[in-house]
Structure formats: structure tokens, C-alpha cells
Amino acid sequence: MLWAPRMGVWLTAAGLSGLIAVAAGALAAHGLANRVDPQGLSWIETGARYEMYHALALLAVALLMRDRLGRSRALVIAAWSFAVGTVLFSGSLYLLALTGAGALVWVTPLGGVAFLLGWGALGRHGLMLWRAM
Image (cartoon, rainbow, N blue to C red):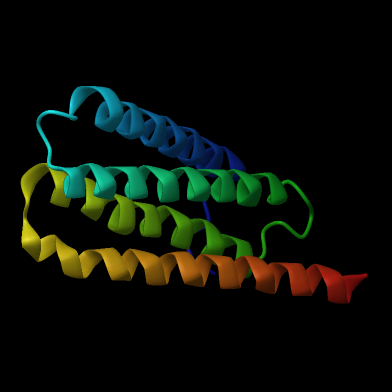
């Protein structure tokens, strides 16, 4: 099976991701309004929103790992996908907004694909639980 950190690792990652999402949103709203153009502020807002959604999803996955069926391959894939997706999607939007590095534009869709994979894996875990009933 893939390298599968325990629940505490994913709870920590979810907490840090939520913290970064709130900080990025606050920074965009209060600290960068006069330093970053409106498009850049929009990218930061989108990155922060998606990061928060997936911090909450990662929290849910971590909590599901408490169950005896929680060490499924599907949950491990979901956790990794949400974490990697956040770095690629939100991280690339933050860097694009702050640096203008256009080369980062191709990274953002890869993060979106990782998010899709994570949601699909979470759904797969749900089907496994449903069948086990």
C-alpha cells in the first residue's frame, strides 16, 4: 500500500491548511489590496477558498481513518490527493498572484486533477462501506 501516515499526520495537515487559507484570505483582503492587482487578489481568494474546502475534506478523511475500515487504500489516496492538490492548485495561484510568474499557470490544473482524484477516492471508500453493510 502507499505510504500511509496515521490519522494525526492528516489532522495536522488539515489544521495547517486551514490556517494558511485563513491567513491568505486575510492578507489579500487587508494587506495586499493596494499592492496586487484585482486579478491577483481574485486568484488569492480562489486559492484560499479551495484550500479551505480541501482542509475540511482532509479533516473528514482523517476522522474516517479512526474506523477499523479507515485504513483503506481509497482513504489514503484521498488524503494524499487533497494534500497534493492543495499545494499545486492553491500554491500556484498564490505564487502567480504574488510573483506574476506565468509559468505557474500549467500547475494549477494539475492540482484540480488531484482534487478530483481525491473526491473520487473518497466516493470509492463510501461504496466500500456501503457494500460492507
